[in-house]
Image (cartoon, rainbow, N blue to C red):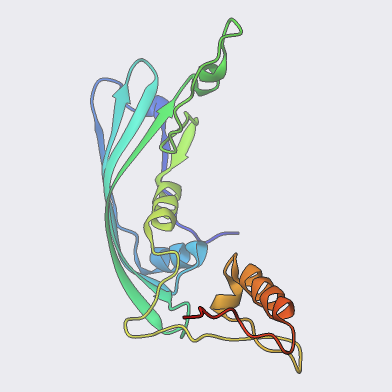
Length: 196
């Protein structure tokens, strides 16, 4: 069983004519569980402050501010890297989300990709919203300041390591052209020289 804290919201229980405000600040154990869930070393501070706003007859929107200080492992040295996250979070929950794709005729409809809109669930856990927002906003490849990646060359024994120059798309063509030119010159031929 997960020790992740929960903060469930049942939309049917919310007033439909006004905002429902919330503030979530998980305790130390809750932050540790969130850190394990999102794969970081530590969540030092965390606050999610906002409102659930009714839109239309049965649709909802979350407008909130996410503030967090997290510690991740450097992708090169594995040393801890601290990152401060301050993000405005917006999520929309649409009751007839699946009907948006239905069309009564064969006309093409261009859908706008919106990764902040989801189907309206019966119950929404705001801790899940926090975890998702942290994953989307934290650095994917944290690097400690002053740490540089080393170049590693791996090849079969006795063969030269491939260089960046070798990897260029036309590098092989240049090698073939040089080989063809040297073949055409022959052993005793000299390149053409202008005669005066």
